[in-house]
Length: 129
Image (cartoon, rainbow, N blue to C red; front, top):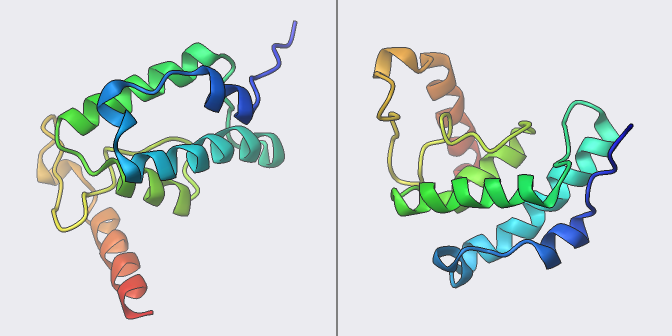
């Protein structure tokens, strides 16, 4: 039996945003964009999987909240994940604005130098435009 994923509207109206994020203007701006990207792009391109339940969206919000509490630039990470057309939010690949990131569980050697160079080129191109 195939489960119909919740609509973007259902997620935005029924899933509770954690208190830590409720007053974060950049998050409140990017969250609806991410939900639409996650749910609607998944249906149209077949590469991505939409959230199959409201609980799945709630779990993602908990992860975003935890990363925010850890000091991550959640707006930039979500935005870059969409710009790169990634399936998920890639906290492991996207550095914060004005700060390089090396995840606590990885050494610099474990992050591809090509990934870092690609990110730097992309950011320099945007700042030149």
